[in-house]
Image (tube, rainbow, N blue to C red; front, side):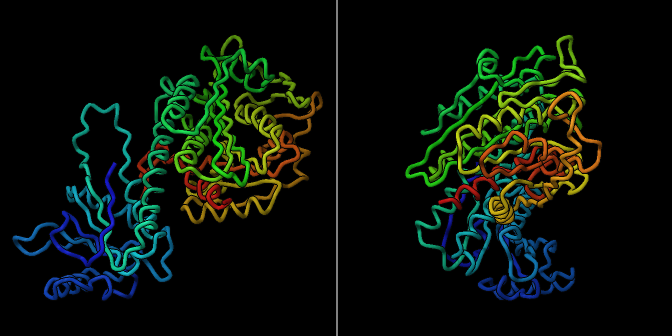
Length: 482
């Protein structure tokens, strides 16, 4: 991973292959402060020619004088006040420009804002995330330029401890986001339930304090996880249930995270990101342990394939869950909620302070909110507000949908307590209402990440594929509990 360093000083041309100068809209002067007068004048003239005003998408590259090393990129931040997401996007844009310029060393001049550890964290996070590529199966990978160093320059810089803490957080979190992206992007023939479990066990061997327990089919049967068993019956791949735990020093809260991991779905669209929720839970618990957060967090990840086979469940089957409730399966492609029900009921038995589940549950969430927002629903407004605030700060936004109790009628079955689908309307809300039936006595929030978990086009901080959405959001929430 690219090394990130802090240094006090001004914008020195020649110290990097690419020098990035951020500019607030309408305030070009501060961005050019400290440059040679002749160079600053040339940039001003070029800015006027290309109508650069500092808007969020404004940018141009100025080559330095003959014989001087490197290039200068002027990049807009948008209007004041400039929030963390604007800095995160600027970091991502700087990384992409470095790729275009073939720059191995990049410097971003933050000016007086370098004293803000939030700015340092956001710009470096965007820069590092934008460097991700999933190309392990390509025979030629030489087209990607390796950026060796990012230098964040300014005056003042934050106290040494604050600066190191900001960078340590980013350099710890980003590899876990990358790992989640890798898990989602792996072909389903590789990323099986057993593979997912093995990756979690590998993390436990690397991170002190992280405990991982993997249940095979016999243990799953003994624990009476009937939804997971029913969904997995059609596949030759045995299911796995992964339980992760980390208890930080002086933990001040106990949180359960539940993630759906359908590693291949023969009917779902899209296919691969059906396991993004489970991958996110694994990455989040591992990152919390690596950061040594003062929380007690347990992750529950039911993992299965959903395939049509001679032993597969059939429409009309009835599942009796460990909490006594019965479910008529009318749609075998609405399988994610069937395995989440097991995990939610199990998590509630431990009586944590909060339970949060993540799943690429419904196409309706993608239709309603598109690919940049995830839906959040739940039974506790304070918990939802905390998650929305964490998502806003992390650049992973949530939008609350109502958990409409009247829609519960849609789940009534003539032969069981529930059916696993409604009539077709309000699909995201109906899915959440189904899950709510397996939540007892705890504060709970459900995140439907069907939209942002996977992108079909390049985004500022993620190329096409899995995005790792949710890891940074959940870590922000966990950090706020301290």
